[in-house]
Image (cartoon, rainbow, N blue to C red; front, side, top):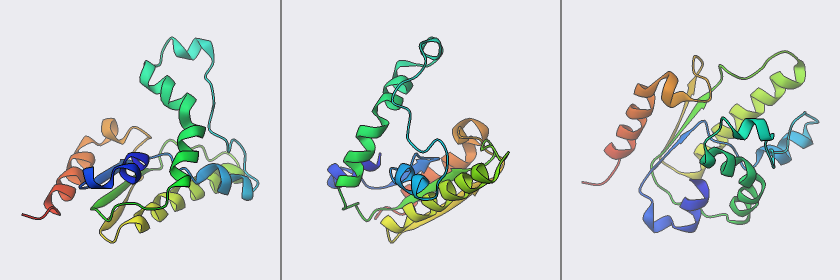
Length: 150
């Protein structure tokens, strides 16, 4: 969504990021000496039996998409909400705790791309906020719609 907004800003009137994957994560993760910083470039063959094709394609395209996003700087100044889930993140080690903090920090930083932005943390949501708390996603979409000029 971020790449689309940067490439076609005139076609975007608002955005709701739902626990989005930040393109800045790999670089910042490595700088902090954390583990599992690079997005996966492939998935195990057994996993492709369970994942829809769209998810498999998304996973394989992470690195390329991140590079494309980071090459473009302009983001449209449109209503923006960043929903951030924290429930599913592992906290078994100091590195995992730091990775979680970085993930949330990067979500908060995404709100700086627009002058009309909100950050919403959902502590009882997993990555699938739309399943865990669909009303939060609906309310966020409604907020973006309410920001539109009449």
